[in-house]
Length: 219
Image (cartoon, rainbow, N blue to C red; front, side, top):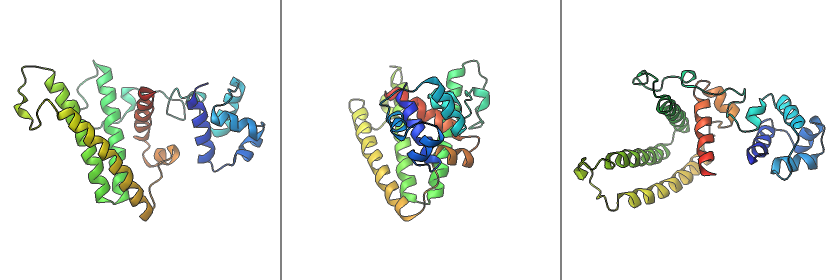
């Protein structure tokens, strides 16, 4: 059983505001055994996966990390809302279209959350970080063709990448710092899976898919 199961099992319990003692009693196991499942110390049987899925009203696929959608749905291109005016270019190459929609929808959620936070500094820091990510991807693609002139860019080829990497590392630290300060002053919007699904019924699944894919790439 993957660590995703242990993490998801814990998250579902905490979302419900349940103690381990209460959840264990409802699931007809000991608190110690539930603690072992949530920590990934012990693997459970399929029968418990089904029981936990029924208890938390989610699919077994969600519990096992096969999909970030609690209903167990697997996203396709047609399931996602159009993120921009150019999204109707056809789907003869499905992967770029799917990934574009996922990214656009996820970013839409992020900027709406920033809007709700009402903190200009936090919005500026996030925008700066995303600008650097776009710059990195575009310049890498641009530079792959030796016929393209490097005169388009102010930063020399020899050190633009380490410069951007360093700036993104600093930017990520700034985002964490400013977000913590901003949330200390105002009540942050709900960012639990349930809260996001209610606030963004058409977009939350894209964000959850992006997060899932990112963590899989980092493992």
